[in-house]
Length: 173
Image (cartoon, rainbow, N blue to C red):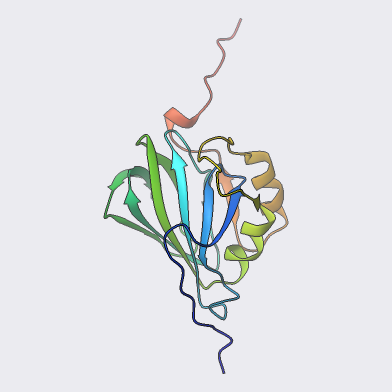
């Protein structure tokens, strides 16, 4: 018998959390509510927000772009995904994305909803107020790497693979 429950949430409803990756999440259906089948959250981001190159060994990640645009890096190529577009990262596939519009609103689904979706997102986030503004907290890649090193749910493969997301390299003297 499933431990899933009926979930009904309106726009703006759901637990809000600051993610160490710089996003402002609104949990729409948690893994505990879906009996571990999936986790669903809205992610609000701002221009230039990248993710590190990473993979999820045991989870599929689906990102549907509600508003704005992202640049997805997968298999060494970059692909623009705009409003109404979708990106699916099967388990074990290295990927990253970069927000290329002023703001972006994404709907993310993680399948199954155990592991990364519930445990690591909570380890990498903290509660956010209702008046929290996306982009007012920068990504904390050191925290992401530290949590990932002790995790079976995500592997950080390197920094964001996008030239625009990398800090400038100082000229040698």
